[in-house]
Length: 368
Ligand SMILES: *[C@@H]1O[C@H](CO)[C@@H](O)[C@H](O)[C@H]1NC(C)=O
Ligand SMILES: *[C@@H]1O[C@H](CO)[C@@H](O)[C@H](O)[C@H]1NC(C)=O
Image 1: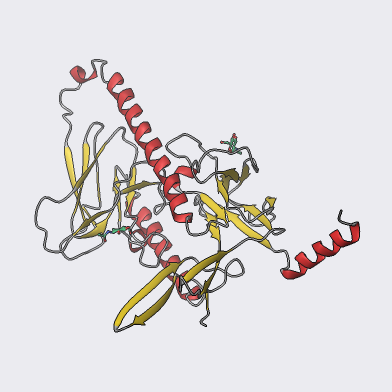
Image 2: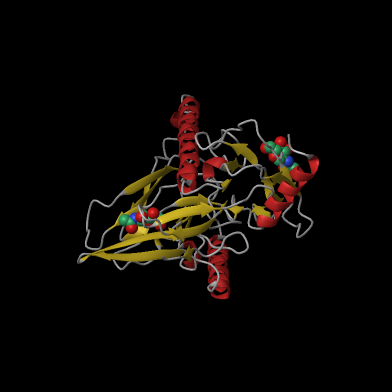
């Protein structure tokens, strides 16, 4: 039997080994992005071992630490899930939804989760669950102690999102097919559908859509034709030009220099006369963001295309300013080791991101 004193002494010893930490995770942000910041907690130790010389060991949230989810703009939650089913509650903790208005700047609501063991803790935002706009499906996931499989976890969430989007598209096509059974075409023989081709990029690698805007009728098709570089066409809103609104997303289409024909295409059917706002998601969130460089397009923009492009350029300017302000503390860190043995050389490397003190520390390299 443990005496009460020895039990307390053991606890004190465990506590003195490493002080309990509070890890704050920002949920959402002032731009309404569907992100947890940081996306995962991990610090890394690179150590040497006689049999497996370059072993990487992950050390992250400790027993007794607290995860503090701080809810910012939009209406997010933090729900525990599993690695296998990222977007489904495992019956563990659930913060509920915290709507935060766009104007709020402090006193954000928080939700605290104690870290009970060193097992991974998988978390997602349950907003718009099972809809094409599912936050989890857009990759809004977080993990404490994920080891090296955080990327795989997020990829699973994004795959669920892609499936939900495909199902949403299929049902909207079914709905519009049903609607078109009504004899409206007989009454409007003059408005034959038109195909509008928008060239994305060009042989010089410019970050442009040509034409940058156009007017289209219901039933027309927008054909995005991808030329040189590696661009995409993602639907956004006038207010947030560089953020997906959960609508269409062509994915990236890399086209090599020298290709002169058979460019990949992506078609969008115009469903109504509302404006359709589009941007290129290449280098999103980086100072070299294509959207931030003004790579945007509008169908039926009215007289608002210039204002839309100005908003995108303002985001680009902000990303550039942030990068120059924080370039000493953020960005990927690549740990590289070169092993030379009996004349042959091998380089091992791994890239970690993002490094944001105090959550993570720069990998420690130690040699024996
Ligand atoms: C927040 O989201 C939940 C779940 O979608 C919803 O039920 C609730 O009405 C939303 N609250 C606000 C204020 O938008
Ligand atoms: C195209 O861009 C995407 C997104 O940045 C990237 O994941 C992909 O590797 C790129 N493809 C090529 C061939 O450069």
